[in-house]
Length: 373
Image (cartoon, rainbow, N blue to C red):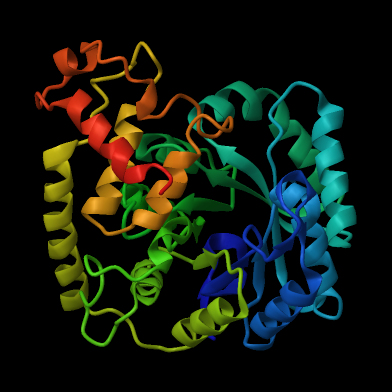
């Protein structure tokens, strides 16, 4: 295994981290629990190969993810860096502390190495972290319940740089992959300021875990898209490690093989990737550039999101994940609004579209392509 410095923390971390969000389960929905017979050997396989970083959160897999990590840590605790998250930004201090106490109990640890304010953005930082959470998390550190104050992040480059400049957090966990490179500037900035940069979603939440002709064979000797995706993230020297949410032993073994190999993508490889992705993006922009001028829709149709999923299918060949995301629109707080069926053809969106796209017609096409087959 290859190791990197985790910013100014003084820690050396394996460049592959084990994300505990997509572990194999038994049951479904609110009854789903982690399958220990499958997950524990996966963790131990990774640990034995040198992976020394594991990440979870309070609510992953109905709260059972942390328990599965805790079970797997038995006999390994002194060798593994444990990261978890607290998503509470409300005003009731007891609820924040309850999340921390639950994490300590479930992980079966006395102290958490990296404690993250979950899904930080500029609004939560100014409106909740500064006036409330900052005091709570510092108190937890003073009491020896956590070692380092960190955050996971969901916002733009400007917000990221402002948060970096506060000096409040030692590491940041953020989204970055072949299909989502919007935070590259912020990643460079965070690294230069001494923050550890942990990348989640190197295979885009599983979207890049499949074979697709549009993305395959961009780099000689790299045949599989998941390998290309992981190597792309790790080619960025401003990244400390890539968190992979592995759900099968086969995925663990493949990722270990990739991240134990010292081969790096060359400047020529990265240039070829840039050129190919630019061509694909230009094709996608012909359909919709995602400017969002068409919003809001009177019927809450998620127009840019729907076209984004449609583009992932017809341009990038990622139909499976696109259809799954489309099917989830309106079914959870994480994906509000309506799918294309709710379009009444009022025409408001087309009046506002700077590209003058036939949005109503394309929504029908998108629905036919993305609906459950």
